Amino acid sequence: MSSLRDVFRVLAEMRESGVVTDYAIGGATAVLFYAEPTRTYDVDVFVTLPSGAAPTLVSLSSVYAWAKTRGIEIQGEHLMIESVPVQLFPAYNALVEEAVAGARVHDYEGVPVRVVDPEHLVALALQAGGARRRERAWQLLQFGGVDRQRLRTILHAHAVPAEIPDDV
Image 1 (cartoon, rainbow, N blue to C red):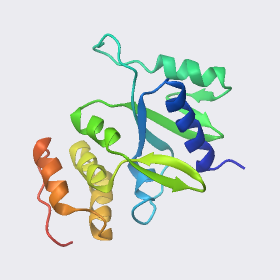
Image 2 (cartoon, rainbow, N blue to C red):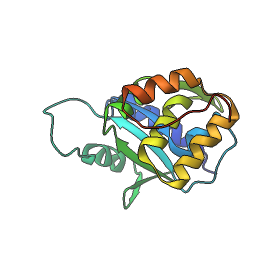
Image 3 (cartoon, one colour):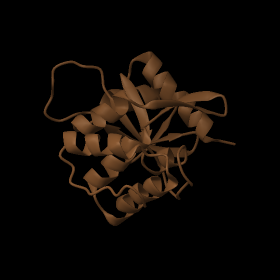
Image 4 (cartoon, rainbow, N blue to C red):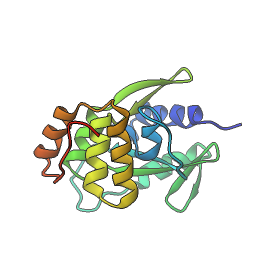
């Protein structure tokens, strides 16, 4: 039976092999490390790619080619790792790059996994916008594991407009 542990092992292998420079779990899957889990279809993973010529358009073709050599099925934009849909997002702005670089390492059933910290999760959700993402941000704020001053600093540094109350 497949599990997130299997997904996290493959992500670590991607990093160790150099197909991605770094990664961090984001989105609803990341929330399960800090608050009550929310339902999600796939695992969102932010990645930084090995540097080379700075292309205008980032391609994940090398990641998909690596996955194919390991027998990982590709369905649309998803890598099907042990039947779990995993969507990779190249770090697309400074906030995401900072979130990946500062990811926390958690233990998931004996497997280390890099996860975006709660402050960056809130900032990313507010930057992206949309009702579901705002709801996820407030869920994290209500849980109480967010350093609100650090969050305000991140929001200010990346010009993400938001009013963060001292208590929710």
